[in-house]
Length: 94
Image (cartoon, rainbow, N blue to C red; front, side, top):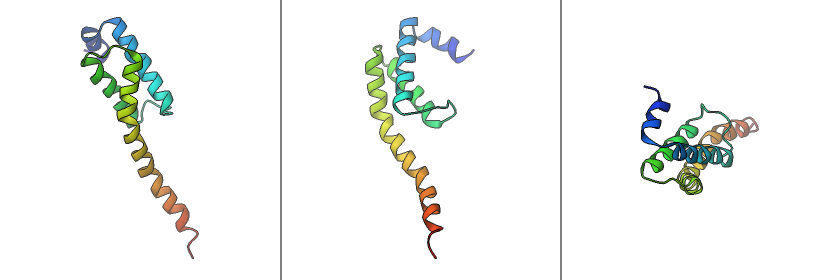
């Protein structure tokens, strides 16, 4: 069974549309371009989690996801940028 078929059994079409809108808005707000990024999968999982808990409003789904994911996203950005900055500065050291 595909994920799409599984979701169709759990959520009605209006619920799926709310999730879709919230996902696209969150990806845009976090400037996520590719679907292969781990943070994109976290965004999708959080939206599904909140939707299963009964949230059907796309704006509230977006707000909840952004609240939870944005802090993690910033930590990950800092973590992955740090080696690049260290490498860049280490070349300037005699």
